[in-house]
Amino acid sequence: MSIDATHDPARRSWVESANTDATDFPVQNLPLGVFARAERPGEWRCGVAIGDMVLDLAVAAEQELLPAFGPQKFRGPLNTFMAQAPSRWRALRHAVSDLLSIGGANAARAQAMADALLVRQDAVTMRVPADIGDYTDFYASVYHATNVGSMFRPDNPLLPNYKWVPIGYHGRASSIVPSGAAVRRPVGQVSPNPNGPPTVGPSARLDYEVEIGAWIGGENALGVPVAISRAPERLFGITLLNDWSARDVQAWEYQPLGPFLAKNFASTVSPWIVTMDALAPFRAPAFARPGEDPAPLPYLHDPLDQAEGGLAISVECWIRSARMRTEGMAPVRLSEGSSRDLYWTFAQMVAHHGSNGCNLRPGDLIGSGTVSGAEKGSRGCLLELCWRGTEPVTLPTGETRSFLADGDEVTLRGRAHANGYRSIGFGECAGVILPAVGQE
Ligand code: MN
Image (cartoon, rainbow, N blue to C red; front, side, top):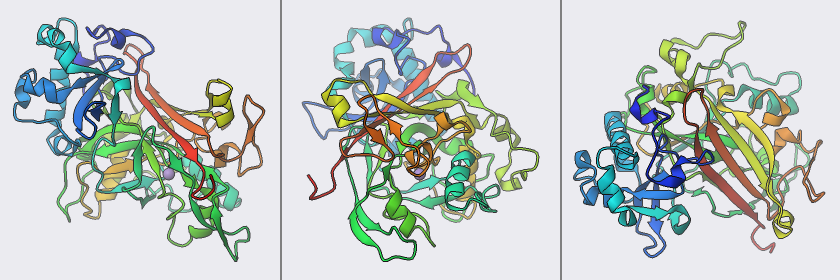
């Protein structure tokens, strides 16, 4: 990770909306996504978010504004670009920064053809940015693991493996949807009595999980482990991830093999991938393990990763009920957490995932697990925030929530700050809950 001219806080874009303090997408960010113009639905192109606009990389390449990327088509999902070397990812960042920065190489030409190169973000449809071959969800917040564990095992909240193994499970890629897609309340088996018998019906304990998603770049051959020292180059970038969860279904089904239908009915990702290069100024030391905790095993320990493998990203969760929308009320914030509270770095998750020779492929997605911190206001799901339904939250309408109701809109937002650098954001990761099938 290195800081260079693309991170210079003095850089300004000729796209005016990129220069406001409020924007998530100043010229220092340059996240990648895949979009279609309204008049050409289904014609997916790679783009870069800049202010409230999208730079069409396919047009930029056709117009020879990206000379080092001549044959690159920049159409369809990002997998082929993710398969390239990290030096290519960085080269594209530099080329685009030069295109969009005032005084940059090619900026005058780009500005002259702005109408062809730029399209408004509110006039495009975004898709999931890569075809996801495999999705793995970790459990990296020790606060989340301790809170949830203490609800179910008050005497023994953290299982003995937690501080040795980055715990995870294989999730489902087919049901990952982009921000804005509605989420249907699932129907499933639930059992109020832990010994059964269960009933079947719409989940009554539908929850969100505030997570950070990491996209894999490059590929390791099957059977060839990923060394912790090489893991950073396998990280392409970061998005926000909402791992919707049906807690009542989960409680009945999770033993002995872990979550299954409680979590695979939908997961929402934010459409813009903030690259690891963009995040260079926002690196942080890995989680400070208390003295009594074991040191990471050698295959999970790298001095550089310990020094700067963490990320300082704050993640917020906002809610707006159907009634709040009807009454014209703004969403209210439920929580704010930080990725600094993750016990494992993403490099450790990647190194662990590949340690047995499992092949990770371009476009694979890794979830952090619910991002929760030590304070109540940082708890990243309703199960924790409302403590298993015992401490409901009250909305401005007077409605209360322990779990999600039909019509609730949940929006995640993320932001990275560091002294001396331009703050960057992640855009939105939002979804509205639809009633279960047959319940409308
Ligand atoms: Mn999760």
